[in-house]
Length: 197
Image 1 (cartoon, one colour):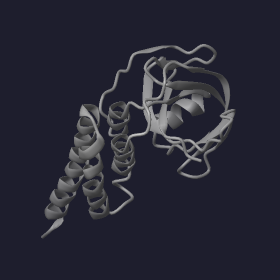
Image 2 (image 1 turned 45 degrees about the vertical axis):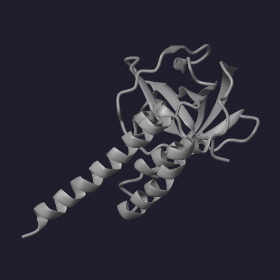
Image 3 (image 1 turned 30 degrees about the horizontal axis):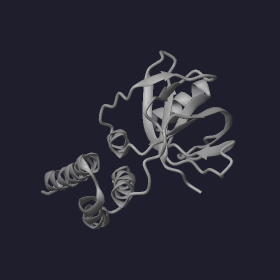
Image 4 (image 1 turned 30 degrees about the vertical axis):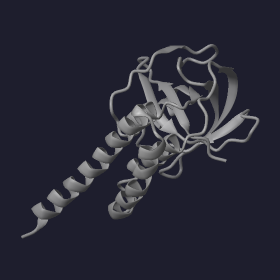
């Protein structure tokens, strides 16, 4: 099963990286598998320092901003066991250490073992608007590998769910993501026009 959330890692200088990620998990959450691309900061940090924190959160605005590279600075505190940071508003967190890293493919397979975990607050609950934003965030990170017309069509479908059931944060998150995808589409049109004789 894939569980969408946020991974925090640190580099050698202690700079925090916040990235949305959906590891493959089982209900026990003792071990799970991350699949970051080798171009990502998460991959580089885990390759060097071998530890981080996975967060379960219902903060879709944070997920959306992190997905498209917008600056995020959620309040954090030091992790209890690993050299890392815990997002204080996350529902649950899982501190982990890398036990296996296979980077023979562009998308790395990193198996991690949970060494500490905790619960900070209740999960808000199921909401179609929140789920729609998470799906839109995933689509927004795939603009280089999926057809833009298909992504934009999916955004039109997801917008209905956000409008019907989302709150202010969900609407803001969705608009940030839609603007990002629209900007990518505009840049592609401009690039193709520049290449025309």
